[in-house]
Length: 465
Ligand code: UDX
Image 1 (cartoon, rainbow, N blue to C red):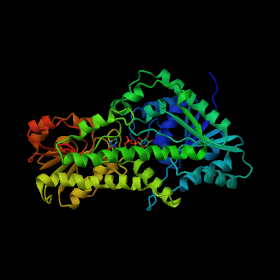
Image 2 (image 1 turned 135 degrees about the horizontal axis):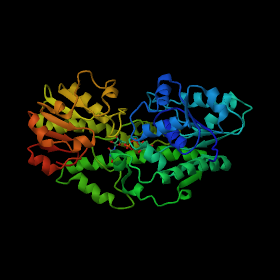
Image 3 (image 1 turned 90 degrees about the vertical axis):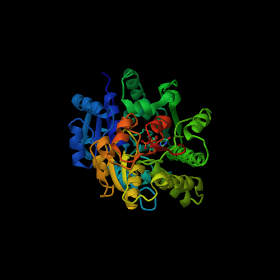
Image 4 (image 1 turned 45 degrees about the horizontal axis):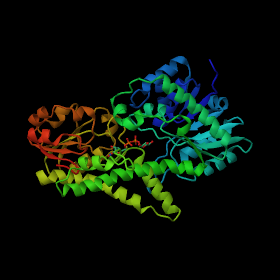
């Protein structure tokens, strides 16, 4: 078998670990590096330390073949590798900008022990201009080192991370060095070959939902999906793409509020609007709004950079305001029927920031649950995967339950806060029977209004009722 150059991947989050598992399955020897011993120990046992569909299978296979080597040590891994992917986190700063300390720290640590000829690839989402700063810090950390730097932003979605990494919709490469970009393109070519071999493999229900029709019908050749550009352009592609998607959602939510003042149904409206191929139906689903580790941070990061460069980004400020307003909008929907929420029993179904993940970062569902408790409601909540994770940010007065039926028992109102499939296809007749009230707020617009009304619910969606 052909010998593929060893690769090191720094950071074992959603991006780093998924990339590591996929590259290891594509035939590369991959060192997956983290500074947290518990994370490395878990990966050594052949699994991820977070829930992500299809990932454990790939990790365990790669650990068994010896292609995936989890390690805490830069000295053991970096000097062995021609290519290093940086996938470390960029926590939020209070002003909304990214904290880049881990990015710079990892790059300097790599530079200190790397061998000449290194290609440093940045996969973490960073503000435009960060790459130049990383290059300069690496040069300072090791003035002798010969290296190239490539920005290669990652577009995977949580819940379908493995699928997205295999089925690359596009590969964005930005660098001063064409040769370095060619080398990274060759790495992804191997991923594309692995993807073709795995055709027909089922990546699970959320992946199937997430990929939609467009991706399934991937017809472009690998080469046509690779975009080589300037370093700064590549950095700007990633945040602009996420900002645009967040904008689409906030736009749909703004129209939904207007639909609520008429007899229109936002799902019907957006089916019509999204059928224009120039617009597209994706990310026009109205509801409680966006959360997660990416959209909120990327949008506030873009606003911070634009402010810093003196251009402003009022369009994104508006998108954030609309998103923030969706929590109060949900509260108002409940108040329409219950008036004062004090001492009302409200069941919240879902706590993750979206279905298919245990990630609760900036979860709109948690924000809504907390707001309801602030208003004096007695809140019970349940999530199939994110209960432990939710405990950190969920108000302590929210009572966590073990099942849908436990949660809704005796409730005055039920809120579908996350569209987990189990919730959407639940026995809503049994739910209605178990409740003492009849108010249903479908915060994700996923339930059939007529069916719910026929069961005796007073139904409220976002932009439909
Ligand atoms: C996002 C981008 O999609 C991905 O390309 C990037 O690499 C990382 O950020 P992710 O954070 O996993 O991925 O979440 P995504 O599936 O995009 O959803 C983001 C949020 O928007 C979720 O809270 C979701 O519930 C919400 N959403 C999405 C809507 O409210 N309406 C929609 O129409 C789509």
